[in-house]
Length: 78
Image 1 (spheres, one colour):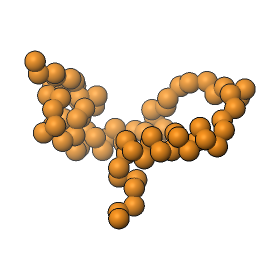
Image 2: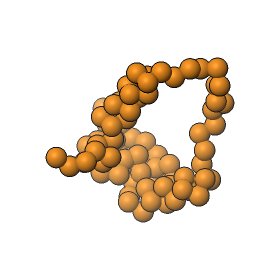
Image 3: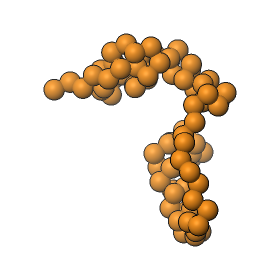
């Protein structure tokens, strides 16, 4: 079964597969428009900050490691 999603920007249909380079977007243009929306703070993740939740160094290190694992473009070339 082929999974199809709507482009978040223009709502055109996108096939969710490795060859769909810009998924979930249909094109680089839609991807950049969305990035610009985030940069201008038109999109926000609304979640209340929980001040009573204490983060340890170990927790921060684990979150950073997980982020870097899933976002290879932030890793320095070897």
